[in-house]
Image (cartoon, rainbow, N blue to C red):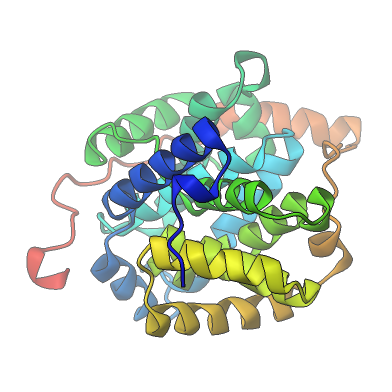
Length: 304
């Protein structure tokens, strides 16, 4: 099989695409959540005093709803999940802090990704999320998250690979460009993000699995050949690829719905009564501050 190289792409653009792909491949491990920290969460049974997979997944679903409500882009949601999981895999987090951490992850991601005019205010996010914390709680938690992640918040994610792979495919193929829907692929990635297990997958592998499954439904030999070249260039072995493709396929089968296949990109509008609005408005004034997460709350080296 021929190699994927600049000579098989379109001139200067091909060189730039391959250069960007190589950069992403170098960076992806650096921004992945610690696998052993994720495994500890996975192994945790349902308990009021410990963080279990169900609580994490429910919080990511909340983040997806929050992103929809504020009209945030997919990149903001995916980055918020990455920040959340990297922090959870590093720190011993109590369930009572999870809402605050989730809101902070969303706000930190929004400030990195969104235009200034599209970044929601802290008070608005507190009111809509009903996270039962104050603006000072948010500020303090944002500082803790940023410090623990060494202020490296802008990460290389599966969405970066998904967009890049999609662009590479379009540069190679002679088929109609609209045949491979990026909106649908993004919706499927968000479905996977709502499962803790996929935070263990390499972003390059997860993105390739999504594209592979979608291309198979299109029954395009040309597109499959291009994906094989991408897979070879990215040095993704068959064992790893087929393992994650099977998990992705099962996840998408469970999440299959009109919303997933034809995502609604309209900004969510929430209509509430005046009484409800007043309760929401007053909520962040009346709740007590959350206790500080102990600085010694990291996972021990022996646990990683």
